[in-house]
Image (cartoon, rainbow over all chains, first blue to last red; front, side, top):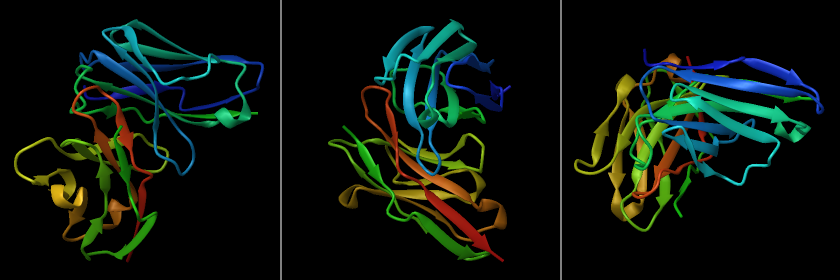
Length: 115
Length: 113
């Protein structure tokens, strides 16, 4: 199994809603990532979890709250988002963190629209 | 901090023609270099990577890239493009210490028949 699975594939939410994005991998990878990709832009790193601990937070607003319940799962909890948060949210994993030569395995993303 | 520039936003090539996508990086030492491909609405797939050694790197789907230190470049090439290669291509650079990967702005490849 070399897949990173993200659910849902599409999500529409209002600015007062609370929702969660889910990411799962069963490759035994110990690092997991959240990236945000606006239309026609490159992916931008949001968070990195290494061995289930948050190791990088790229100054992301608190309305995005990551959670890593175990080594296979990564969640992104969303609350009080703004329309400018509409984007494709990509999850990725790698064998370990600490070496930038790791290959990243990406999920197909959740396309989020905030109304 | 590292950075990467992809000068071409769009490139159109005819099917069967050769392809070269440009990538220039900025980093104080030899970086880790990657090319990823993304189809619309999908995640990214690694095509190839360079860490050290042979400067000509072979990847999947018939792609190759050449690391040129003197030019701070890592251009992606394919001798004969197929219609299925139409996608967006991202060059990325990683620092030798730490795990932040920085992506270029991407190049959209269109293939005409």
